[in-house]
Length: 511
Ligand code: XMP
Image (cartoon, rainbow, N blue to C red; front, side, top):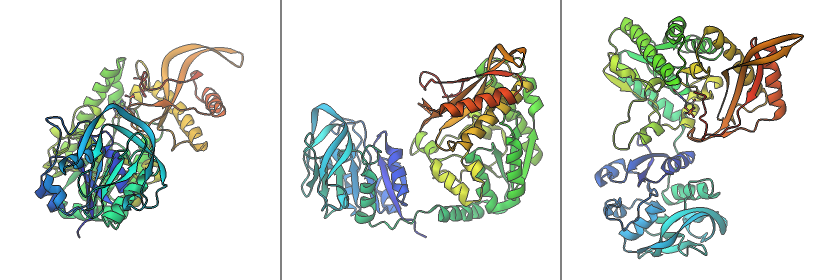
């Protein structure tokens, strides 16, 4: 079956992933390719449309990224965004000029609603500008289809050839009608039908995994996180018991988590599931260690050792499943194959496991698409919408040395916190939230008794990319309830604090 697709040519802009997201939100499949992708490859892919992204360069720079001008002759509609618009203009004989100052921020523009790109858009609409160069005169065949007081040529179009360019960024939320513009480009201009649906994607992927794997053996290191779980279930739907999942319980998971993962993979799906209860080994290795990076290293190395021992029992396998997702592929450099995502951010699995090839069933999917696929496959919502959890687990949420007792204190406190957040209906809107066992002990009073016990810190952040974050403004009554439940229900905790630092300067985790 021929797949309808759109190509996004990447000229180095910061919003490229966002453009791809928007296109897929319109149910059109797209792929991001580097700007130097050759014309034959593009013809071979037969896209319904092409989008040129923005980028930091100026068309007049000597080494500015360009594309084969033959692309304009293919008869495939093109939308150029920012640099993409300037490049199109420059390549087709128009004039691009450097403005004395950069135009940046929200701007009101007036659009020609008769243009297909702007059908149904308000005549005066807000858009997000971020450019220095601008179009002084469009190339022949183009007319101006949007203007603003500071940018007389804010958008151009050659309706006959299906070539369009916008100076602004329709893909960002600061352009409220931007998605509608992208939708117009895809459906009115490119004639897309919008056949990208998660159900057909998962079906096709399962079928192609079945064909590829045949009767061979597959191995998967299951962390219980969303990506590895969805990848494993897809493979299991394709080849059932030919898949073996190894789940290492390092004793640093959240309360009940190990049992929940085991329950899902043994009762609901038809795989060979091996749970390795390696808690004791990890605790022994970690005893007395206080330095965060050392903890990470120990856990990473021990994980590899445990996994290796189990994998050896199985013998040679043909394939190893990895939960690599599309942002990993884009970030690790287009045109090259993705760097294998290292498990737990330390060490890499494939070096020491005897296998022939890696399978990455989620390579084409964004995180929210992975979640959709997970739901399609029947994975419980609880797992599908799980917040990110670091590989080293609670080890980096217990400040100082780790003991089984401290793990248990933290598990109980964290469980109460998560339960109350869920009850308050906030579990999907907060990026990440968890309890931390600080190394601080202080004096308190319980009944008539003096106590000398631990302080638990609560953390909750809102973030989109986990690179920066703000502390979440949780309601006081919720915090109060969590605090009193923790001190009442968890032994050895007599004080609860809420972390009100953003990232930067703090990090999300405490270690
Ligand atoms: P920080 O603390 O650096 O965390 O602001 C950013 C995101 O990364 C996660 N994180 C880790 N994930 N192994 C992981 O797999 C680690 O060692 C690790 N350290 C931090 C953290 O939970 C947050 O989502």
